[in-house]
Image 1 (cartoon, rainbow, N blue to C red):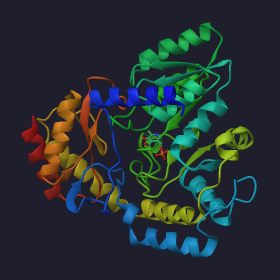
Image 2: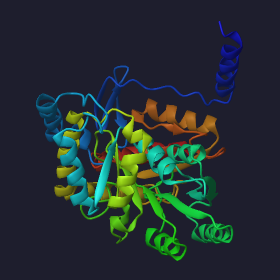
Image 3: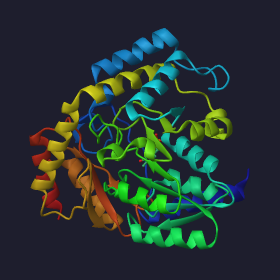
Length: 387
Ligand SMILES: Cc1ncc(COP(=O)(O)O)c(C=O)c1O
């Protein structure tokens, strides 16, 4: 049955296997932030995005259970039909208060929110200008949109300036898209300088702050706030609830006009079941803890500082965030390093193409506020043995 198609699929799988690029999900027996158990064995976890340890905070777990009891487990509808419960509105209002923006819309995932953001906001006469290292969800959205699509060298403002000048000459409307913290390199653009450049060309600046929200800024408002900007200076912001906030789902925030437009024309919003209300209740609690418990961010910063100090002689990428990359080059080397660390009781995934450019396979170390100084010392000792 459909043999030709099956043969084609199998060939593609075989090719990936030969290139050592096959990936498989790991099933966790248990998760407790810094500790995970896989196949009955405990590991120190340096591979997650639960930067502040909120995924297992007892208050968040309780809010999830209470939310389910009060509002139900599922929303049972899309937001413009019957899927929007009081707790969704409460979450939107809380986000507006926290980020000082006019409106937000909730999405089932960051991937969906990025699709909605670019596909809905960019038209045929527009050109999307994306950083070269943009997340797959942004690249796919740009590819599928009706707009033209170009990429500029990573965090390079002069490359962006040249592209903006070219588009002006072609009378195309540019929209600039970047990330607050790049997911594989852990570095950040100079957002105020990028905004100033965008303003020169009257170009909207759209930010994916999946890895900045909760972690940076005085109350965890994210990368814009950390760099002294107001979130409202961005054309819009996408961030998710599944990383530092430890739950799941995502939102887009911005002005009333931009969000009203997304509400009317954003197909990923309109034609999708609204977030689970129980999950919204958990996210609300997580935001409350994130804003008020500055000690989580302080502990994370201390851990990042300690790691950078201890690992100063290792081939680390330049990053001052919770995402630290150690470049190894070949896929084989990255896999062997990850396996060796597992033997030593450390869980740290090898990141290979197509997630990162060819020849730049690496270990992606993610730090959390839950790691102790002893954990980090142990990690660095093991990393040193690899190089
Ligand atoms: C930068 C970035 N944007 C978007 C996403 C997608 O978010 P979600 O996992 O909520 O779909 C991710 C998650 O991997 C990410 O790292």
